[in-house]
Image (cartoon, rainbow, N blue to C red; front, top):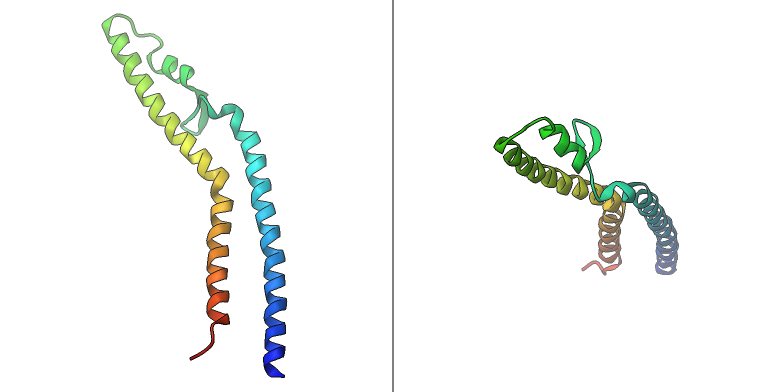
Amino acid sequence: MRRATRRSARKRALNEMSRLSRYAALLALLWMIVLTGRIYPQFKDALRVDGQLTTVEDYVEGTCGERLGPGAATCLAEAREAAQHLLRREQGRSILLIEAPILVYLAVYLLGRLWQHRAAAPNV
């Protein structure tokens, strides 16, 4: 009788965890959709400089806008290289921000399944 009661309690807990898991996955999916729609338009050429979003061209122009002569070509090359580095870093942050909830969900889900597996294993 006790065994049947424990099994019933486990099944209820599993059903409750399954329902919670579905809601968490849905929330993570909605987060990804909303942030993708918000970040995607500026993803191609927006970078953050001193907390302000700017385009790559504006960054290069602001860095080397008034230089003339041979120093201008060197400045432009260095500024473009720095802008590409900043752009890649900003894109990486954006992708991590978009994917973070699903990664957290996956980690929690796997830990929960491991916990359930250990709880269901017969005690020796």
